[in-house]
Image 1 (cartoon, helix red, strand yellow):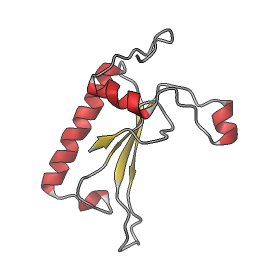
Image 2: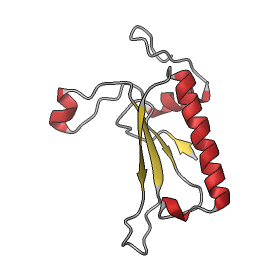
Image 3: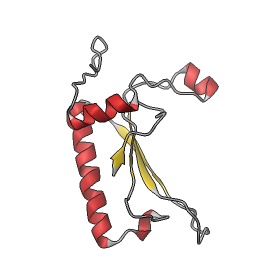
Image 4: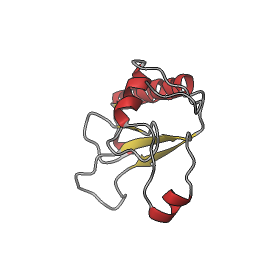
Length: 123
């Protein structure tokens, strides 16, 4: 599943998590790998179309190799580059995100319009 996390650091920060509990990315079954590929393609396609093809980073958060057991649930985090990390963020470790996760989800679903131009607003 794909979701916009509560208190996201960046606009349209998106996490993709498997529905089946798995501690590590490499533990995915063949069918789960196919489902993961489809939702990743869909998510990146929506970002490309709706956010005007932003560059982005992605991070795979997975359990440590030496941790044999545990409750860690791996996930992929996508952070499009839509804002700048400036002095406030660098100095405090707090991030300013001008798009609340509920609006980001609605925009990616196509429920409300979005423009990256500064004079526009998400609603």
